[in-house]
Length: 464
Image 1 (tube, helix red, strand yellow):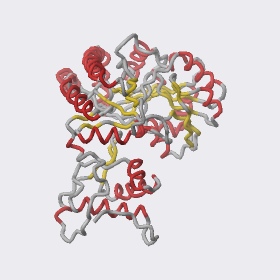
Image 2 (cartoon, helix red, strand yellow):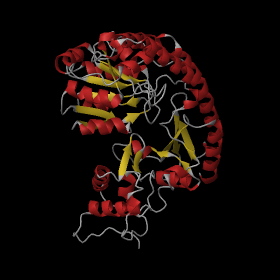
Image 3 (cartoon, one colour):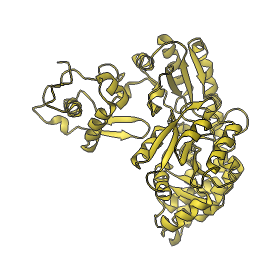
Image 4 (cartoon, one colour):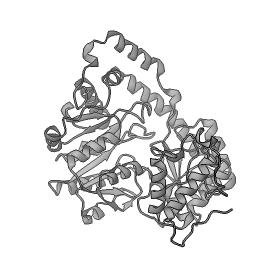
């Protein structure tokens, strides 16, 4: 039977969604590893509030039927034992229909904007450094380290940031942590609760979800071709703004110096105003010189700078860093310095030697060349699309943004791609608030081979 939500009031809508998905999983109609639709899409499909779907997914998540993967969505958990249970109710037709585009593993080409190319990872160098460190390690390496991270690593990061990004900081200002998630949670302890924060729309959803979990009061600020609008920021009742000036995700906007000065002026206008600069992929710029960090122009101690090695080296290298202005550093030392560093000293030592001895710079040069070739190939393959799409976000980062010129709907573009077993990512997935603008999709190329880029764009040409 076709699934329909009952509106007689005897059962909550979210419970009906929860029960139906659970039955689908138990019956084996939703397979282990299969991706579920986004909450936004499912809410639109069922004509219910998005919070209703959030409640249903939340219950399934807490009971272990589904899992949440950062930056990717919700997936069905392994259920081998559960699927052997008898007396399962008839689930009927999936409420998802064909909108998911099949199982997560059924795509021939996945233009994920989050994946990187691991073929260039320097396994031999990493193995050699690890072996040397473990061979000559003493007991000190296995003792509890400094809360902010080992001082030698922070010195190395400080020198690297100054030479590559123009960041002005002392090692004492740097805090090392296992990923930006941890550092943002630590920042919440430093800034305090119920902070009023501004974010661009669209923005990096992961950070938005983290801020929302803090009970932060989030206000979206309109963007233009230069990034977050400073005039709109002035009108917003906020004390902190989260920005990605060197390469905004997902639009790819590079903030010009004039707009940066306007944001710094806004931050300087209040004692408790700060800018959180997420410099997540600044290493990958393919034309011209690298854009200096916003923090490099900060003269009043108003920028909280955040970066990571996960994007440049490997996702498993869960080492990020945060540079605190002196005023916030004092607050950290008084109230939060008892938190232990979340990165092992062995991993810190390996990374320190990898960066200090020039291996990291050589690796970046190699990866820039590799990604530049993919970037240029994708642009070449997209030439036939220019009649129907505006292509933007080029020359930096690991994805491009295609915005439809006509009246095409984003869902239609995503579904048409899925019908050819190609996965693309709608811009709406990064929206905090609804947007009535043109349909747009993200095409990532970092994790794809050149053959897959050609194959994927050819399949898209057939349906777009």
